[in-house]
Length: 228
Image (cartoon, rainbow, N blue to C red):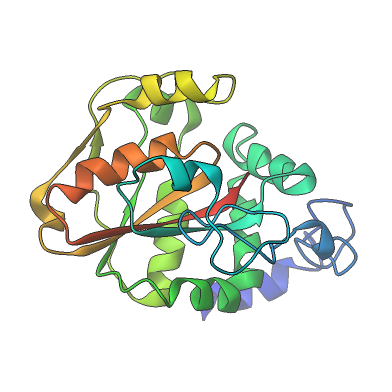
């Protein structure tokens, strides 16, 4: 209540601006919303965006490689404006821009409804990355989704060693970089787990995390803000 009143007082002085065009009024204006592309067709396993395809279509990776997760969803297409938005959050520390997810709350809840999860586990970052960045974006996303679907957040996943940024690595290098880099705790024992991360590219990070969690849990699902 106090926060709502305070926001109304401050809004005329510090109005929200569209993160794309800078127009006053909201974090994402009506003209720029179409730039946040929600794919119409996705891989039915990993949920990555795909060109127009049958509803039962699997991407090449899911068709040829064994996955430790049951299913996942990459909400936006990681391209153009969405890619810039996520980079603004991670590397320019514009953490408030995560609030854009609030505009898609009902659609995200609907997308997650098919995953019968008991607990939410964010992808952890190393202490060094936490110190440099000041936050873990996956944890912030997890906390938001936790409120929406009323499931607890568990920090049952740990990084076992330092890994370099995946951004500039090839698919083969990404797999090697994160191999055996996660350790899961017994907090997820017997539970259906929803992993949260910001971006799904090759899926190496998600799959390694799922492999660690799967040693104790029943089933592992995942959600990312965007995917390639």
